[in-house]
Image (cartoon, rainbow, N blue to C red; front, side, top):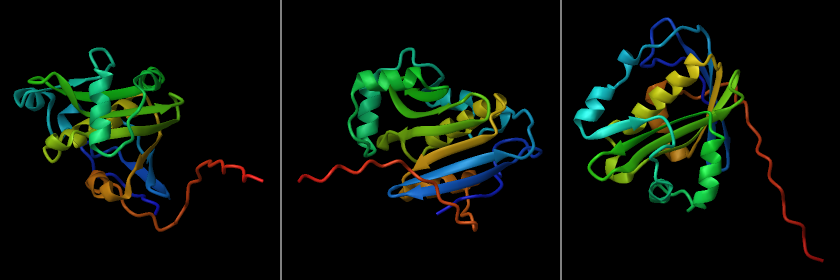
Length: 196
């Protein structure tokens, strides 16, 4: 399934994104093309930083203070396989933009998203997760809105993300729609050699 459309987003009305997605097995790749490049305003987020703080959350933009074991627990809680914390660290060190939300009461991460790319034209959003105990209160939307804002401010014009088909409904209100062109992405997959 290919998703494409104009984002009716928390961004200014003079900027829009062109979106495309590609599905392979359980993942969906969604991409966005900037049509009009303008500065977006943080005042247009669905939930402000101040509102997050008033609810006991703090938004973080670096890996400092991020407990990788706790992040791994969130990954596992949403169905990702458990990951080696050293590999998570390497992945995060090679990440261009990231956001995570810490619940101050427990000092643990409860929402997370990151993007990798070439820093100029293309970025891919990865690992969008919200602890199941905190889903449905706007934390996922908060990290995605801010991550897209960061990427747009860097001038990145092609933004893609991978998603499980079961959570496509989360991205649709952010402007993602089915693409009638039916363009498909490809994923490299090495087949194991047959034993003789």
